[in-house]
Image 1 (cartoon, protein in one colour):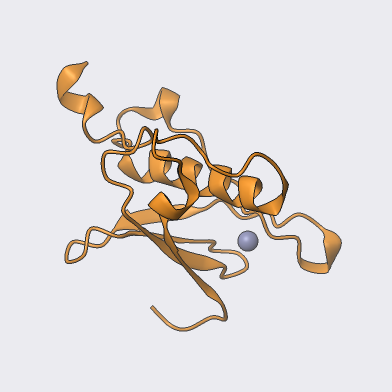
Image 2: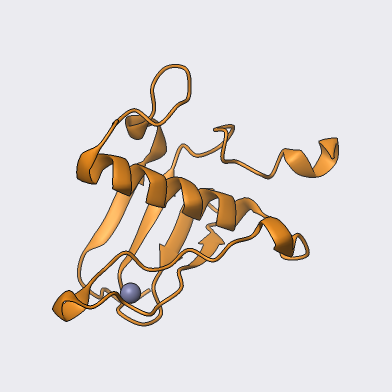
Length: 112
Ligand SMILES: [Zn+2]
């Protein structure tokens, strides 16, 4: 991946309480945490499971207008980190330690 500015490297557990809930109650940290958990759901939902796979809109507001991009996701086969990027503005990042969080849908596939 080419470097296109800031890359958000986030460890999901930093945003969670010991009970696995989103830690921050309000403010930018809460918004970021909710954004990241949506990306985790998106990245771990099978493509055929479309009804629960809601697109994640880009959170950036270049020139004070909401970016029209829809976040795309992939899972790095080597590190298992979730990679996400906005194809419109190039905002991108990785999420680690998402496994077995309540937003990890990979384990639902067998149980449902
Ligand atoms: Zn964007």
